[in-house]
Length: 533
Image 1 (cartoon, rainbow, N blue to C red):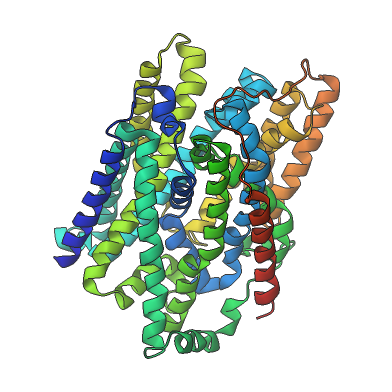
Image 2 (cartoon, rainbow, N blue to C red):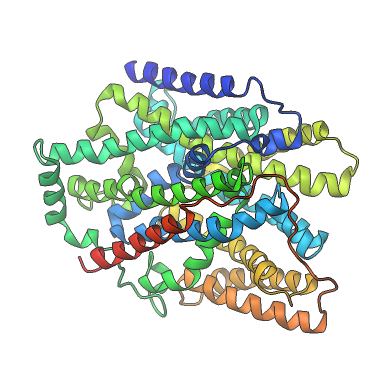
């Protein structure tokens, strides 16, 4: 009963705080609803980006993978810092100068309207088919495991998971539909700090318990129990037999992982939309670089507990690795604190869920509805269409969520494999738009279609013996070649240049470059220091 009261109290506080922040805002305008009125500061952007990214697929999926495979999974996190540095120093100044609401708007300016529409549709499909269902399902696992919803209601565990998915999905939809981006950002900030505190408490309390009141002694015991789990450099094969079952071979950090990270942090609508809503370039850069700092620290929350789980449980949960984190929570957290933790978990689920809904609604309303269905649509009409879109997509995600169960390599690995279908082709088109002026609109579309077919055929149909991240790298290179080849036959019809539309103040943050260098150096040092454990 105590944990339920704590859960309800914290959840109600977050909703009350965010509602008060919005009481004077105009949510009927396009910028007000979709971009938070372009008023977001660096701290809010960083908190929102972090919590949009870190959700239950990380807490459960990455800790589950770390439990079974060790710290090699850390690469998904720490290499994000370098991508965020590039986003802060190269991409966001150009986005803000153009006054973009969505990334596909750039593609219309650079190529043509059809390229923008294709990317819009792919983004929406990727959000509803991969991200949202996995976020909902992993959240349901955590809540069911801690609260025992099925036991309380006298129903089967499968029915308990279904019910939790529906309830969480509906609450997330309400946030996204009625609050817009600013509501999402403010709830993210509070929940983000809550997640950081609660997430840190899990390894701290566990190590305190293991070390009999001494954290360093506890860490030493965990290390001595399985030192190989702390090695961040994987010796797994990435080419040939066994490569398809490998988790994250070290060599893939230099091929497809680079492109994936750059796309996710510099081009993915649901992430970069926070920075697009910045009050100035200075605040946008602060938000991106602070996020980079948090990503370097996040393995303490989403990798270390998994390794601690191996100390407690041994290999008895290898067949069900996604239950490790919930089991660890029940073992180390006081009863009252589990209520707070589940409230924060709920916040993390809602953050990623409603952020993705808001982004998908933005893409459809601005990129498809206004362009093809009602060119004369007012801002108020676009906002209403965005709300309707959010509701429809939420229902679709809730329906798909239970079908992602039983992923053999864990839910986080499944998410990354599915993302490859969409992320790399879209990244190629956007990167080509900035770096290769000779690529034409027809060339861009040819590369996009080729990339989609290449990944599906090579990795999923023919199932060649190659790690899926390497497939991303090869796909990226081939996409660029296809784009240039087609563009020779169909050259660009116009010359593109970025124009400053004067939407926000464009003075750079004076510490942007020094902090960017520092984050890059720290990332490299992590691999030097932990690469031979």
